[in-house]
Image (cartoon, rainbow, N blue to C red; front, top):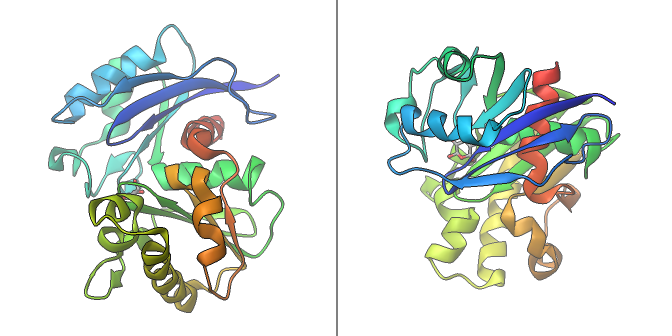
Length: 242
Ligand code: BGC
């Protein structure tokens, strides 16, 4: 059995676990440590060390940033000091082992395409994670087009993630109907840009799909994510395995 290790860095928690790369199952209960505040690179990387525990070998690390060649280029919902940080070199030096660093939504999408709601789906697949922000992962015939960042599209004069994320739903105290209206407008806009054959909606809110899925009224088929909260960990481990 091939195994790997994935660590998913989020705004509230840093989570990691060993992953069975053949099935996408976690091989042990995931470890979760609160994200330190301020979530500077130094503070976060020190927690990543705790989450890695006594695991060995190459691992995957996600960040809610555009990540090109191991370097973070944006920091929408994390400390601005990440911008320009060569995260791969930094985390490899701290952990003393090889790492692959990727955008969090891209990692979750890779897991959904391999083992979850988009398994075996050809054509254009778009995963959107609806959490603190909105993350996106775009695939064509199973191949990832990284760092698409469709959460930052404009919606009604605002950034889409400030209007239609799960955090926006809570912050503005929206009913499911009100939130679904915003999501419909957002998904229609995204449809005009990439014409997906399937949209997978992930993030914490995918666990409550019975509340909102029936309220969506858009052209592309929409499915809730299959791997729920573990998708980032699983995808990070898969990407680290190459
Ligand atoms: C970030 C993305 C990230 C998404 C979900 C956005 O604010 O720009 O990189 O994937 O949040 O965490």
